[in-house]
Amino acid sequence: MDGSQNTSEITENDTFIILQKIQDMRRYAYPIMMRWSIAEKYAVGNDMMHCMNELLELAVAVRWKHFKKTTLTDLDIKNKTLQVYIKDAFELKILKGISSYKEWTRRSQEIGKLIGGYIQTVNGTAAGNTANQQQKASRSSRGRYSR
Image (cartoon, rainbow, N blue to C red; front, side, top):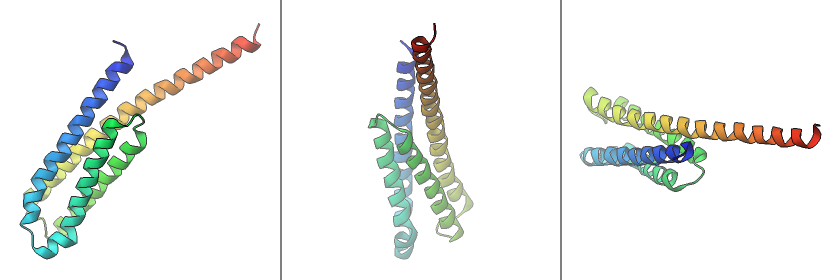
């Protein structure tokens, strides 16, 4: 098995883990949000749940897209947006207690680390391909004009 197939297997597994972690976070968040007051649900809860739904959609897209860089960047940005929502909810006293805030933050940071690792894997593979393409181009030009 060559290195490109191995990288492909690693990244598909990473995508599955990211998808699973997002689903776990949604399952954790939903019952908590249902206990919030109606005003809190509509003011902050809807935005947070919408953000998590978009994270889920982007994770599914990353899993099936051939070119992943842009979608991974969007996924990372959406996760950082969710982290801001979590911080705002805590500061507005919607997330009650430091332990609740820490759990939400831990889950989001874990997803962020997985995304970051996946981005590095994709960028490393892309950088290797670019270097190989440049080497091939320089070889073909030398062969054409050198004696």
